[in-house]
Structures are given as C-alpha cells and as structure tokens.
Image 1 (cartoon, rainbow, N blue to C red):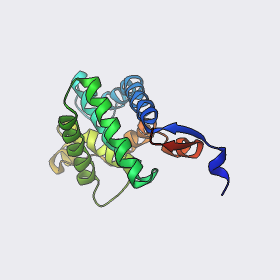
Image 2: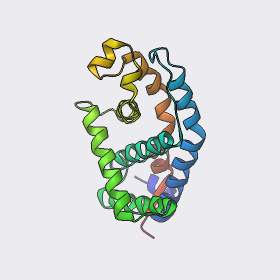
Image 3: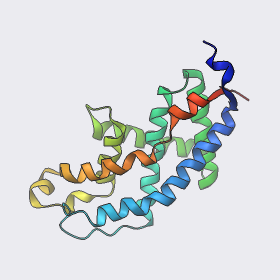
Length: 181
C-alpha cells in the first residue's frame, strides 16, 4: 500500500522520450545481429541480402510490438496519452505527420496480430512479422517455401533475440509513478 510513496515521479512526456530513445538505440545497435542471424541461418538455403529498408521495416515492427505491450503496464488513460506522445515523437524523428505515422503503426500492429493468431506472444509475432515483411519464404527449402510458412527452427532463432527489442515496461512501472505533466 505504501509502495507508491517510495516511487520516483516521472512525467509522461519524459517516459515517452525515454521509450523513443531506447527503441531507436536498441534497433540501431541490435539490428546488425538480427541481420546476421538471417544471413547465417541454415534454414534459409539461398543468400538473403539485408539492406537499410529492412532496418526501417524492423524498426516499425519493434515500435508496434512495444506499443501493443504498453496497455498491459499503464492505466487506460495513461497508456493512450503515452502512446500518443510516443507516436508524435517518432513522427518528429522521421519528419512525417503524426497521423500518417500512427496509421503506419496501426497497420503494423494489425499485421502482428494477424501473423500471430491465435497466440498472444509478442516475441513470436515479431519473429513472424520479420519473416513475412522481409519476404523470407522464398529463401527456404521447397517444403516451407511452398507452404509460405517459416521453418520453426528459423523462428526459434529469431525468438531468442527479439526480447532485447522490447522496452522493459515492468521495471519502469515498478520504479516510477507516472504523472501527466
């Protein structure tokens, strides 16, 4: 009951700044590892060329996945405000309208849900989204290529690295009390 008095206060604007910066840094530093996993995967029998466009797609996957997790850790009125601020900040970073960026993120969130159905595992949805958005089906052996489904061993490799791209909402919510301003 008294734990809330021991928490530091963090306003929602700072939380959104921290989140945006953490996601950008993590993707910048971690995407080369994802690219290496893809390039060196024995389940992909032909060479995959990874380029900057793939990193942009991956960043959108990571943002969408993180925003899907946010409501599980903040109250409903807070999660919608923080989500809005995060979207606005990313829109500024990429010099696009916030409504356009929000639409793109909503499309990626829908895609994550679609490829992950019926599961609710965010890590798994990220791996499957990478597989589909990168068009990796064509690089697999004939059996999986014809099914247009990822080899489970390949997905397992990606699943092992995806958690590093998820913001640690639990530790932040345990440490801080969020205030609107």
